[in-house]
Image (cartoon, rainbow, N blue to C red; front, side):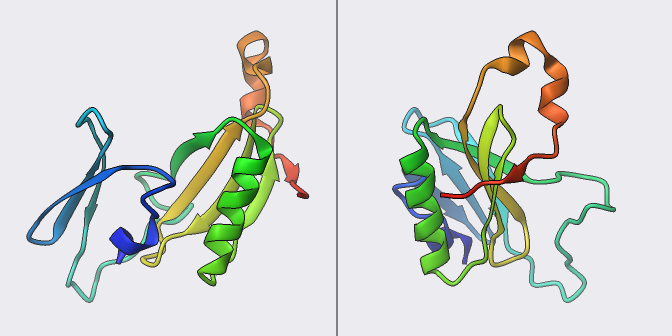
Length: 128
């Protein structure tokens, strides 16, 4: 299901599939993301109160119009999107069909280079 969820134009150009595992790679062949489908009834998505990966984040461009287009594309699939302005990034948050949290972002400022504390800012709603 994840294969059809992440559009080719947004992130990665190629897939390699074996059994229940899929690898997504960059044009250079570097493996960027690995997805595994579980048939287990006990499989659960990650959450804020569990150890492990909190979410995966992908830079999708440099301009606000690119982020807006990505938001429209994801929402067109019936997926709820939270848009946030963190100053250092402008981000979209949503879940894939398996409940895994994802972030698509553009950089907003290089203020973090001078003041690393800004990375931890909560952010405010981003209004397109």
